[in-house]
Image (cartoon, rainbow, N blue to C red; front, side, top):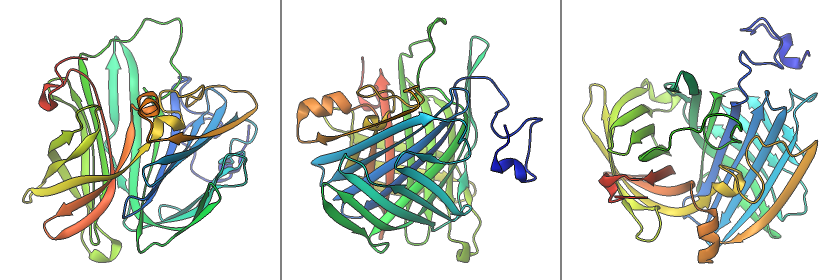
Length: 364
């Protein structure tokens, strides 16, 4: 089937753009977007998923107000024939200026959340190293991703209250990934079960200071041995300084006693040919993105076929301990970052499962 993308001279397979180069149903292309103020009072996380081998496109948004209330809207549709429109019901995503300016919108719906946000990149995006994993002869993961920090503008309306986004006191982050993806989606049935790891750590950071940005993505086994890593220091275009590769990080987070959530910590970045850079991390807000469909929540899972069109929404009371137990697993922690006298802001994602002695977890 021809789409508007087939008009451009950018084909890389002997097929049209409505197909990918593998029949793996795990093939996913995903947009993740984050916008928040610097006080930790308001935090939005939204995303889109494109699953060509499942014939599904979906979207979600989660908006946290003062750490007490989280508004959630999720939607899904049949991908074809509108495969070249990043739109799911009231959700839409527009690339206005490639790698520089994008727009996310959530229009009228009955679930109490609407927004229109423009993201302007503050620094060129960073292309991560590919994440690849194979088990018992089968590729489990083969993902490419780029990330970018920027400034947002626009508005959010939640529960009838209007929040104007001032780029002077708001920050934004985004990523775009594609490939064979494990985790976060619908599992296969009728196949040999996967191995259950003894323990595992996933940690991602994307943050910006006034004159530089930083990102890293690390996976570790139960004993803190490295499984995969990618990281870089980023700079504005007018800085005249190229991106610097981060060779490794030493993360020393602290955790809350009753839940595997970070409460603070430090990260030391070791760059190629440079002195170590230490950043102190202090969480200001938490967005529970499982509610958006990561690993499944209340009947909605990324990539799950829900018919020709589906939409739902709800509000979470984050002061209720039972609600937190239900929705916790993967969170976006909006953090203040301090490096010497410099102050920055960004997102830390952290998942620790099973045994991980470095942080005191000796069993499931």
